[in-house]
Length: 209
Image (cartoon, rainbow, N blue to C red; front, side):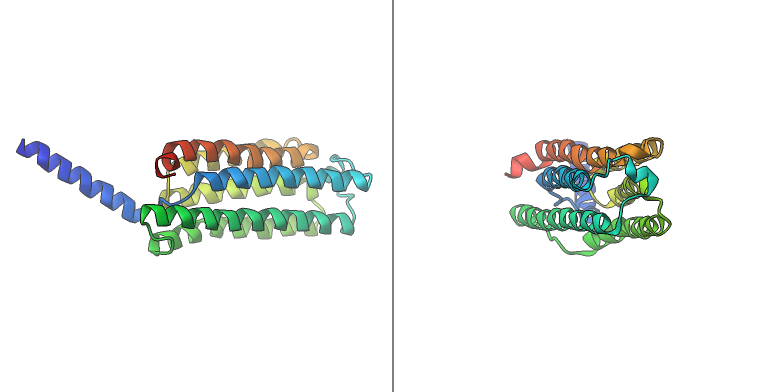
């Protein structure tokens, strides 16, 4: 009996250490909403391209004019802002329910490890745009986003690593199908996020709902 008590104490200590070293307030619903925003953004982007008589294949030929690029950029920014605002709101709400802090040393490490490769990827995508290599932008976004998720996963749920590897592999595949970059982008940032968000919600969030 005494040995069982010691084992339980050790298990409790390990659990507390895990909670203190990992940010566990990420909301699965945030992933679902982010995926929906991404798919909606893809639809809008395709409509914009169609309005200007530019097929998706034109992404491979670097033939999109500045006006279309600016509109696509604004769509991407809108998707990003909506995803971030939703994630912050839902994560904060979940943290209040579970009594967790949303801003501490763990969340800071999570953000640093996430945004370091993501920022590098963003700069690299701008370089690709500078040289007219538009077809490679979507694959590179997926690749660097996947790396960012993998890099940050050690400070939160390990499930995030699976999403990271999925986007990384998808991005590498997309480099061989440049004319379909927009569709790969929709799969990675849209479908994968929705599936991941539903999985996370059912696994971690439902009991706190």
